Length: 231
Image 1: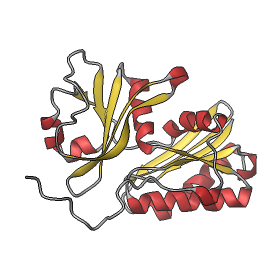
Image 2: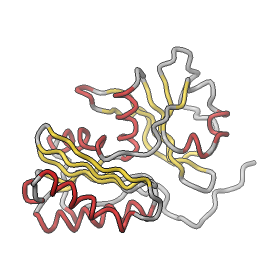
Image 3: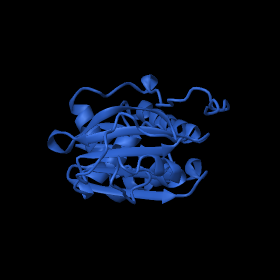
C-alpha cells in the first residue's frame, strides 16, 4: 500500500510516507511553524522515494483532537493534495496514534491518552489492543477536567499506562488518578508514522472519504469560553 500521513494537531509537525513495505518520515517539534514546514517536508519525502501524489492510494490525516489551528492546517493541506491527485482521505484519531505507539513499545492492556485542551482540561481517550495490531477504543474521546476518571477502576496489575502531553502539562491529573494508572510513558505527541497502520486498516474497511467531507475532531466548539468553576 502507498500512503502519505500527516499530523499537525500538536506542537509537532509530522509527515510519513509508506511505499509498499518501506516507510520514511520527518518529525519536527517546532511550535507555530507548521505552515512553513509541512509542504516542504511532504515534498522532501516524495523526492526521496521518487514517488508522486498520483502513485498513492490515499492520504492519512491525523484528525485530532488537538490544536484548533494545527488541525486546520493539516486538514487544508490534505484536502488540497487530495483534490489535486483525486485521492481519498482517511481520517485517523491523533490520540489513537499515540496509543498505537504505546501498545507497540510497551506491554500494556490499556493506554490512557491525555492531551492538553487548555483551560484546565484535557482531551481524554482510553485504548486497548485490537486484532492485527489495531487499536480499539475503550472509552470515547472527550473533554475531561483535572479530576478522577471515574470509568477506570483502580489498577494493580501494571497493565494500564498513560501517554500524551496532558499528563505532563497537568501533574494534578496524575495525582487524582495515581491509583488508576501505573506509569506515565514518555510518548507525548502523535507521529505520522504511527498513523499509517491505522490508516491502512481504515482504508481497507472503507473509511476513506472525499476531501470535502473532512471534519477535524474539535471536541470543544467554543475556544474562548472558560470552563465553569469547580464547586
